[in-house]
Structures are given as structure tokens and as C-alpha cells.
Length: 261
Length: 270
Ligand SMILES: Nc1ncnc2c1ncn2[C@@H]1O[C@H](COP(=O)(O)OP(=O)(O)OP(=O)(O)O)[C@@H](O)[C@H]1O
Ligand SMILES: [Mg+2]
Picture 1: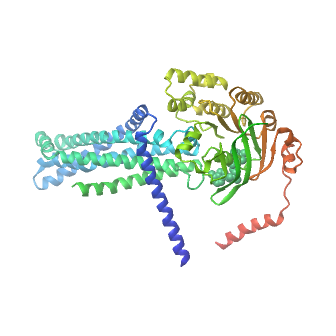
Picture 2 (picture 1 turned 90 degrees about the horizontal axis):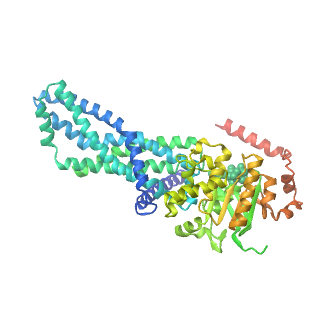
Picture 3 (picture 1 turned 90 degrees about the vertical axis):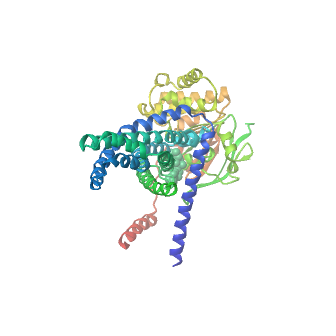
């Protein structure tokens, strides 16, 4: 019995230590914004990296999501004879929910995993140690530029996702199923208010922090706990990072929605 | 030799998740000297180095730098200490997303306000010093193992450090290049007055460059002193190391058996 309690306590302490370390990591990552070295060019480079990695896959996902929304929306709405609402239905679901969530998930899958692997490789190859020995703050030099790039990229990619999705819905609803183009577009225009856009942007900024935080953290501590710096640790860290980021993004989506709605 | 000790290791113990790998290590590192650390593979040389450069946590009062306690350094003090260091890692640890010259430029870009052109020239000078002038535009993955080591050394030298730590600089190098590296290390001491700590297996090279030699075995120091003192040592293990004799198979049947049996028992117990 005491053994059980003991091991339970040890596991709890372990988890608490992990959480503490993760929190500290976030603090260092944010502190890096005001610390040298200057990071203009490295941020640009990261924006390029995240952008190119995710641009096409998000466009693709958004187009098909918009088309499915158009299709499903049309058949549901036509039961009530209100096909004219299709535009507002598609636009609202995209701008409030699907745009931010889908973009964040796609960026996690494409860029987040690559970022985690990159940092994990630097960890197991002693490159992060080398940075520290050069008196360079690895958080400020490596992690913060990725955070800033994520904060720039994700809202832009979300907006792009929203627009492509709305046109996907247009394609199916108007060109295929015969909703009038005016009704669709005015539906979009009349129903979307600033608050919806605001909500989407808050979400995408939050998801950016969450995703970069988790992916860089997992890479940064790849193998550290086991004291084993083999290549398989990078693979494991990357998988963990993608799963944990995706789950947290979905959970955070619910929380943000319930607060802002 | 009339040198003061820049770094003083006074009773260093080190553990990896409960397993002790360094036992009460004591020695001094005099400044503007070359200290060579030798020992069989796995005896704890790299671990010792990681303590000295502050990558592995050191308990208070086990390492003193300039009379100050490395174990009690705060972030600021650690950063100031590290700005005096150049480190070559056993693996080279080049940043694999950058070319060799960009690697060397990293510390210069972060710590100085020199123009890009000046930094480019300084990187080229360091590359030249190590015979890598043509390879500045190569990615680390395009270099051979020995070249990677030399590029890592070029990066360690980028800021002209006061103290240089090198972990096995000549492993994987041919005799000619290795001899060139030895000469470079001697020159760095003589012309720039660097304090240099070298970990190496190469006996010949060790005796050629060392002002002080430290022979380690299984986490302890076997012998320390000038090359002549080490050569005159009567310690059995030291002699074995110097004469490159393989370990005679230890006759420890009981331990061996119990290890096998232990495995047996745990297996059948499952
Ligand atoms: N990250 C680690 N986790 C657990 N044990 C480790 C770790 N790194 C090293 N060790 C152990 O510490 C001991 C000393 O290792 P170290 O790397 O210091 O040896 P070394 O003298 O540098 O060997 P080599 O000459 O082969 O580089 C070894 O027994 C090794 O198993
Ligand atoms: Mg070693």
C-alpha cells in the first residue's frame, strides 16, 4: 500500500516537474523577444519556412472543406427551403471554427513536426550545447524566431484558408447546385461581423503559441530525460509533439470558443 | 612552472542517473599551458569536460575558476565565463543547417558588431588556419569526419578564446594532418597565450604537446604531472596504457556467473 502511494507520489512529482519545466520554457521563449541577438532575418527565414511548408496543403484542405460545407449545407438548408443562407453558413463555420483549427492542424503536421525534428537533431548532436558554450542563449537564438514567425504566419494562413474555403463553397453551391451568386455572397457579407473575424484571429494567435511551444519544447528536450541521445529519440519527440499539439489545439478551441461566444 | 591555476578541480564527483562516473577528481589547470587528459574509452573524460564548461551541473565547491565557485555561478556569471571559452565537441557539433563559413560566423555575428564583410574574412582566416579554405561553402554533411572536426575547431577559435577545450581533435585524422593540428595547438599557446585542455588517445601527440598530462582510469585520476614524470611512472595501469597493452581477461568467474545467472533468474521469473 505504501509502495503504491509512493510510486503515485513520485509520478505526480515527475509530472509537476515536467509542467514546471514547460512553463519555464515558455517564459524563456517569450523573454527571448527582448534579448539579443537581433532576429529580423531569422524570423523572415522562419516565416518563409512555415509559409512554404504549409501554403499548398492548407489551400487544398480549405478548398475541399469549403466544398463539403457547401454540399452538406445545401442539402440541409434545402429541407427548410432556405438555400439562400448557404453563404453565411459556410463563411461563419470557416471563419469562426474551421479556418483557425484546420490551419493550425495543418501547420502542426507540416511545419511543427519539421521544427521539432530540427531542434531535436540539434539537441542529440550537441549543437544546442555548442550554442550555450558560445554564450549564445539557445532560447533567444533558436526558439523565439520560430515563435514570432508562427505568430505572423498563422493568422495569415488562417485568413487564406477562410477565403479559399468560402470560394470552395461558392463553387459547389453556386456553380454546381444552383444557388444564386448574389444570395451566396450577400449572405457572406451580411452575416460575418467583426466579432467573428476577431474570434478567428485570437484563436489562430493562440494556436500559434501553443503549437510552437509544444513542438520546440519536445525537440529541445529530446532524449534529455532518458539521458539517451539516440536518433530514435527525435522520432519519438516528433510524434509526441504532433499528437500533443493537435489535441491541445482542439481543446483550446473549445475553451476559447466558450469564453468568446 | 610558476603559473597560477586558472581552473582548480577540487574533489569533483559526477553521476548519471544515480551511477557515479567520476570519483573525487582533483587537479589544477595552469594558465597558458597545455593540459592533456588521457585515458581509456569510457573513463569519463568527456564528462569531466562537460563539467568544466558548465554543461553538466556541478555541485558547489568542486570546481573553482579564478578562485570563484563554478557550481554557484548565476546565469550572468556563466555567460561571462563562457565568453572566454572555445569548445570543440567530440562530435564536432557543427550546425547542420548552415555552411561551414556560416558556422564559424555565428559567434562573431552574435557577439560583435563587425560588418558582414569583415566577418567573412575572419571566418576565412580561421578556415585557412585549419587547411579548410576551399570548403567554406560546403555543408557540414558534405565534409569528411576529420574535416568536420577541424571545422569545429575553426569555430571554437572564431572568437580567439582565452581557454580552449578540445575533445579528441585528432581522432579520425591522418598522421600528417594530426601533426599539423599539434603544431597549431602549440602555436596557439605560444603566440596567443591560450590555456588549452586537450582530450586525446594519441600517445605520441599527447607527449608532443603536453605541458601537463593527466591519466584517467574508470573515473579516477591515475597519474598527473609533466610528460617526463608520467613516463617515469611505475603505476601498472599507466604503464599498460603507455605500452598499449590490452587488458588481460579478468578472471572473475564469480561475478561473470552471477551476471549470467542474474539474467537467467529474472527471465525465468517473468
Ligand atoms: N548521457 C549519459 N547518460 C548516462 N551515462 C553516460 C552518459 N554519457 C556518458 N555516460 C557514462 O559515463 C561514463 C563516461 O563517459 P564519457 O563520455 O565521459 O567517456 P570518455 O572518457 O569521454 O570516453 P571516449 O574516450 O570513448 O569518448 C561512461 O561509462 C558512460 O557510459
Ligand atoms: Mg569522450
